[in-house]
Amino acid sequence: MFIEPRVGTSLAASRRGWIEVVCGSMFSGKTEELIRRLNRAKIARQQVEIFKPALDTRYHAEDVVSHNANSIRSTPVAVPQEMLLLAGGCDVVGVDEAQFFDESLVEVCTQLANRGKRVIVAGLDMDYMGKPFGPMPALMAVAEFVTKVHAVCVCCGEIASYSYRIAASEDKILLGETDSYEARCRPCFLEGMKEKAVEPISSAAKH
Image 1 (cartoon, one colour):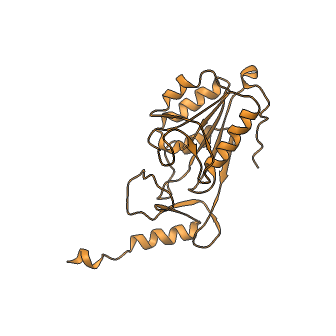
Image 2: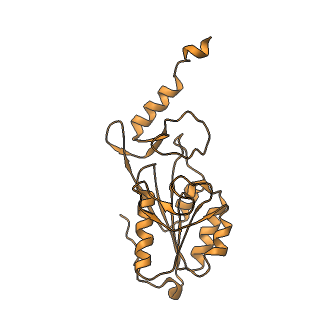
Image 3: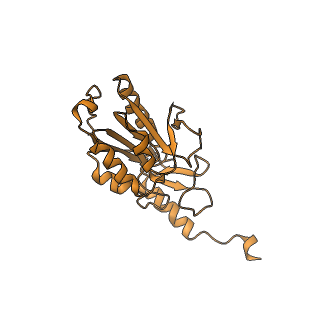
């Protein structure tokens, strides 16, 4: 069970930093949990900075927005190194959609934590193929706290941990919502991948 650190503690004064990772599939509430923790830090009068990948403009060009339409101001960055320059005076650093950053995010988060900052990272732990996604596995390894949240399988209603892609694309990164992805449990995800592998050629393609 995750025990959230005391938000009333002054990180700047104690110089004790750490990394928290919130991970899971699409529609599992990762961003919702990130926003909740950051808002609690704000209530505790801590200085907060939030970052997200510049490429993610699905809901808003700047704000971090959850599927439930909750939002919080953020700063879009192209590369993780920008966070080191922009987070100098804050106590808490939030990072959303971490899977879209490159592996250098791990070192950046480590440096921020070493400087006494609480770093909260949210992202997909697996891609649409069910494989570890980007820097997330390494972040989970170096983090003091890891929380895995779950969605509901659209096929059977069980706990879902996989992001099943329904859009016709094999790109590693495909921004999308319910028009492109479904949350599925392991059996339903495997069944869907099996069906894709044996999907017959359409009659149009035969001629």
